Length: 282
Length: 106
Ligand SMILES: [Fe+2]
Image (cartoon, rainbow over all chains, first blue to last red; front, side):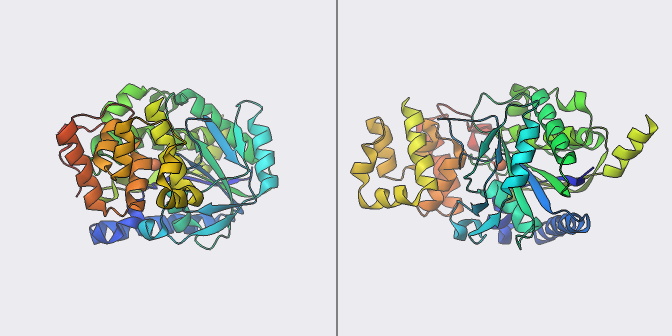
């Protein structure tokens, strides 16, 4: 077993871009939870970070849109946005083409994944990296699930994709952390930016902490759009982590709506020990 | 096809410094590469973020475009609210306004 850490984290660009406009208490508590996650990843001995994101037409567009794509580059640059706007300096982060190739090859046993040797990170990758690996110590394996241009991959397939990622991680000798990054309910990049359906989020997170496959894969996209906005389609990144850690419970280390960040800010961590305990009991 | 072309222009502009250079140095030449309606072309030429939003340009690439064109955050949100008042609901894509465009965190 070489998956040593699994969790989820928010990536909305306001988290860094509009930091000074947030309630300082909420903001600092959220940042502290993000840093705690960074520490936990470091403490796990992880050498690589599989970052499962939902990018925003930075690399993948409707001319050729993969449902799933895994990066296989030697390095990745970002942010694609104006660094002064995002307030994250531009830089490059190391990839690991050999590890990526092995992961892609194994995932392909069950999921027809695309791969990319070129990839420019947008805020969807840069915000988590800014908090979790600012020094570029981890090899990044970026993973994208199309949550932006329908038709979108169905949730039960996302679950299978997560399972495939797990199989691939377990086959690798490297110690690997997996982090899913997306919003829950939110209406970003609309006049309603800042609208958050907290009740929906808390209900979703309750299902997520239980790893409840049936409940998590039951959302229709029409329901998600109505109740959680188009930003809610990014729950796919959370489901991929659940699929990768099937049978495990998880904890929410932080959840608070921070409207100027345009999302209910979330840090969740899977109890990998609980997965082992459940397997031993069966 | 046209909304697709309009979005493709913004997508390429957002990610490619060469396209950004062409935008500032030879906008006519750049626009000739995309099949835009006269209305779409005018909205691009005048940085009309509100109308681009209503036309159905994906919100994420439009947010990036607005920032690149120098819109402050509140100006960008206001431009979409104004566009909604002037032209009515978003005509395509996923980024329709809800609650009449009211609310949000400005
Ligand atoms: Fe996002």
